[in-house]
Amino acid sequence: MKILLPTDGSRYALAAARALSGWFAWPGGEVDVLAVIPEEPKSDHRDFGRDTAGEQDWRSTVGRWLDDTASHLDASGLRTRQLTRSGDPVEVVLDAVSEGYDLVAVGAKGRADEPFLDEHSVARAVLEQAPTSVLLVRERTASGRQRRLPTAQQPLRVLIAVDGRAGSKAAVGAYSRLAPVEHAELAVIAVADAAEGGALGEPDARKVVRRVASMLADHGLAAEQRVVAGAPASRILAAADEADLVVMGSRASRDPAIVRLGSVGLEVALATPCSLLIVREAAPEALEAAAGEPEAATPFEIAYEGLDPSPAAERHVLRGVRRLERVSPDLIAVDVTLAAKAHRHATGNLYDVNLRLTRPGPDVVVSRTPPRHHEDEDLVFAIGEAFDKARKQLIELREVERGDVKSHDETPHGKVTDLFPDHGFIRSSDGRIVYFHRNSVTDGAWGGLEVGAEVRFRDEPGEEGPQATTVAVL
Image (cartoon, rainbow, N blue to C red):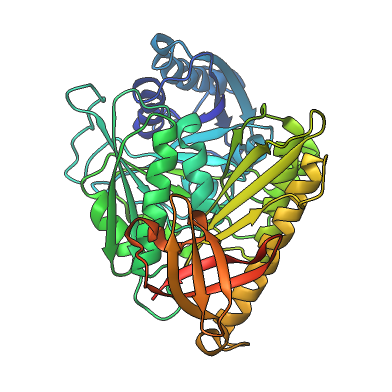
């Protein structure tokens, strides 16, 4: 973990140092403490306001800044390095950020200070322009009191604001790496925006919150789930009144023409009474240059049944998820099951590939089974077939949602005639018998499904006849 901490010797910069050492636990982390000698120091600065005796006095003052800031980090076990540069502070800090830091920590004024977040400050520039994650530390509460250090009895209250978009999902995926708080009380909040063009409706907001809580649980982190209605920025700010740290996501980019913080994020940053962590995962072009394989914005999980985990399989799943993102940028999550299929031959392998795509609206479930007469097949090929089917279904759903096709008039419907532990059969309105697997039933309705239930479904030809890929209970 490599962190940049700019300092000007102010109590705000020292607060950022205290937060790094007292809130978080980065074993082996490295902090570069950077002090900038302004080319034209402000006349009202507490040290530069007097007549100095030349560069030696400049360096003496900056040396005190560095020593004071580093002293707050020494007891934490973080390795520190002191850097001194000259020039315009904003330009120097933004230039330093591009040197490969995982996080930039800056101190900022709280509500009890004026101006709240100066438009020309280093903190504001880093927040709006830095291409990496940013920790904006406000140590004092709205009443001017200093925030306490987290303990088991009084944990750090962390509010994670999500909306299901790529940057938001990246924030959750990187939270445990960027903000390893030893004593934390987590809450995940999504705002159901009823306004026209709002990011999330209430059902999708609840789905996003559940998914995020599940992702955190995979890291051993329990979180309260909250869904509230209203304007996103104002509702997040209201919840932030009871928090010590707000976590939000923002997609990174190396292109300076791209706005790196959305309107909601900026509004929260300008008005939140507590500290703020903006998580910016590397942009696809940066990852591709660094690692040769761009990451997917959508979180995905792979479960292996009867076969060992495979880097090659993971790589092809990643590529499949990226293909789906181009068709459906609003994907929330992708769950993949790769299963070795037992068959009577002593040699060769066959594979089942099952996908569940979590998205606004009904989930999409894809089951890919090997052709009946195959005795051997390639796992990568099987993965590719499954993602091809998923991509086709997403395109069809998009056409339905846009009104290019009539969803209710043209989607087959029927009644459930038989149910077994993991599958069932539907008699369609045109008299066909259609097989479906429990994983194809949307919205978790399998558990309450009964014979005679009316359903709508999408089907495709299978080895034994038509099989439903998606089943929605009416």
